[in-house]
Length: 276
Image (cartoon, rainbow, N blue to C red; front, side, top):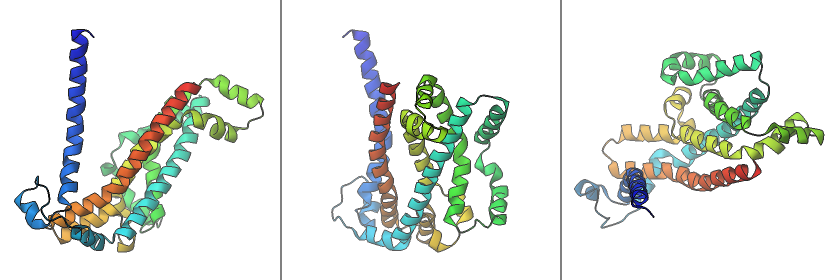
């Protein structure tokens, strides 16, 4: 290996190590301090627990009403993700394969949604959801996420579908495959790497969203994890032992999902490359 190549490799490894530390160190301190009493946290946040305890998690469970908040969050995340996959996938495929004035117009209109921050329309959004009686309904949040996730997701799908050779579809049509089956049985497996990427990005947004869900869900029975944690922090601002335990509980399901989804994304990209 040449000296310049070794230097480039070393620089890349250094950048990867620094990036990993930026991500891992805050997570490490959160998890570490979630097992410590408040006195130990106040004394030294970087020290290992002298008297490890699970009392923080028990208190966080109670204050968050964890299972109810987790159920609401998972319902919103799962159905929002499934709807986004169906809507953005089929819409992006249709636009990519039917390039005319009508589809180009709708593509521009849908894509323009990426240029508008939610904060600019949240007052209008709140009034519309009120007129549609979507308040305090989990479906109201799911429907809202479909709308706001569609532009970026459709953009990614459209670009990916354009890279799929049309000859594959022609062969399927000759074999008698209809439009709906053509997409789900032929195109969808070829673009599943992009689909898993879309799901991963959107799940992160759905799970951690606070502003939109706070607008729609005001009753305690419909609280998500983020709303429940914010309410808990307001009630007990200096309970850092319970706070870090609550944060750990909230990120654990998301961490498990991303560990699984990472493998699925890599498998999808590999499968798409081989088939392409």
